[in-house]
Image (cartoon, rainbow, N blue to C red):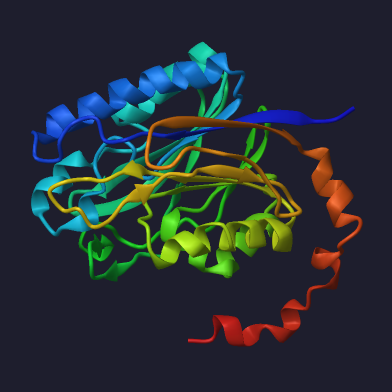
Length: 289
């Protein structure tokens, strides 16, 4: 019997000007996503992921300490707790990208993973942080992730997370595969330009190299006052052969839904024996300082 899981990706244009009060922006985006999650659940989605830093703008477009006030504890914070309630209500798994506070002044770019019974399962902290012009000043806001590459056993399969810039680094994507991931979500905030070509190159390559499904979520729209570029959306699912299964609209709100047969993972791995034939004893140079 096939193990078919319906996945959902939510991409959402900023619903309140980035020049509004932080409290107003945050509440507006949370309210918007509550409605979008309900719509995704109505479409039959069982495992749903939102975009990077979903409840605000992509604030690393500037360096300003005011954005530190967006941080929350995970899982104790109000957003994670709300998402636990929604997961329980809709009987869905949620991947929730937030701005996490560990201690005052110690902050992470994080995604919480919540099971379909509303139980918080754990979190992933973004490892690789861009700090470059124009408009990606993440080391001002985040400490590099320190929780490894966890995979979470959910009601609907084994879920891993890789966040935005992480996707340029194949090592963590391989670790997620070795840790048993069946679906890897990559919530992102990516603008048009060089990265748009890579958007549909790197993540299908991760899916092929590690033989799992990938759900790639990109923020849509243009965010003033920074206007660092168009967040082009086009979120998608791809299968373990690297084929794109479903794709979202460009630069506007969308819910992308795809049915993933998790038994395809075994089928593909029995043909392409990448995990059997890898040679980790030969790769020491990768982890050398």
